Image 1 (cartoon, rainbow, N blue to C red):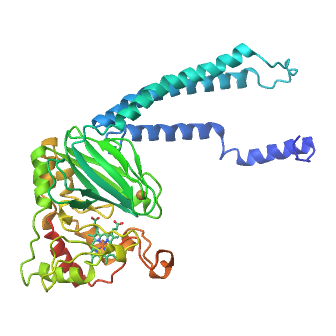
Image 2 (image 1 turned 180 degrees about the horizontal axis):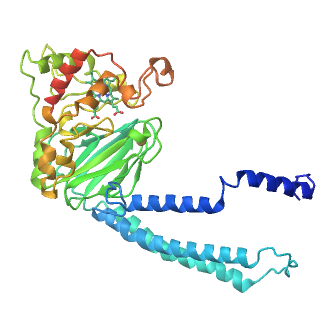
Image 3 (image 1 turned 45 degrees about the vertical axis):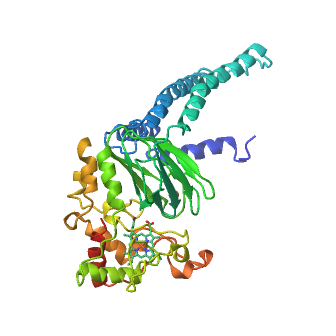
Length: 423
Ligand SMILES: [Cu+2]
């Protein structure tokens, strides 16, 4: 029985009064119409071509395998869903309360009960067999052509290529961030882990997700059929800037990939003496080099400078900036390094030109200076990060992300000139 002690007649009149006042706002017809418009909009938006993270548009063998599985599963689940709701609504309507006497109560119909147990089991087996087969298939690492390590941290991805014969040969480690460059048609095995909390790596058009867990290494195989830029984002909630933890895979033809690798391993070229970039180099050494590595950078005594992000950042890492201007996004792939004018030249390049255009890197003319300046001026204002010095007790005084460094506009000019040469 209801706990409501209001006499029945009063209750109904109260309810009627209430419902007349709010009737307009919650008109069920209008709600339903609004609902269906919203659903339609969502559906149309989901189907639109401009959906860079669309699992329904696989662009590689592994993504294709998932796609081939999700269709039939979606179909079976959809049919079951429609059948269940059909029967439910029919029963609700057919046996609605019209004042009829309570029907005869029955229980114990073994045939029906066994039947209704076997039927879903059969359906589940029907779904399970190809699912398990696909899982085993996706985990295959026998024919790996290239190994790439991915490390998640709050809130960006470090991507490194260990020395190997794979990937067409890597003679020295290549370390970059945010954007993974691969050769089309090769089986890449991503070995992923995390430096702080659990993150999840997912390039929807190339493969399914894989959680990246501290202290463990999880693999994720991917390959791309055609050159292009394939977007993804962290898909395991990882704190404040989870939504700003993005990444891209850039797939390019063999020759372009070889050119990319060679460029990544090029020896350090010091800026022209007395240039703005040279001033930038010393500013970089004094302000940035404790966290950020630039390979080959030397101090005034001619000694190599090795960054110690492990002493300066909570996760123990900061992006390697040796070749910053060879990527075209930064800070967890949240911002473009390319200006609005130049970005489409790469991102919308015809398939055969993607690698070539990407390898041009970011020139002074194409730099999106606005976002990079804002970043250097005040990083935590640009991307939420835990850098407030008064609130860092939990992390031994170390920031998560890049702290505010109070740089002058002159220093920023110098640093940009210096960074523009890192390509
Ligand atoms: Cu994350």
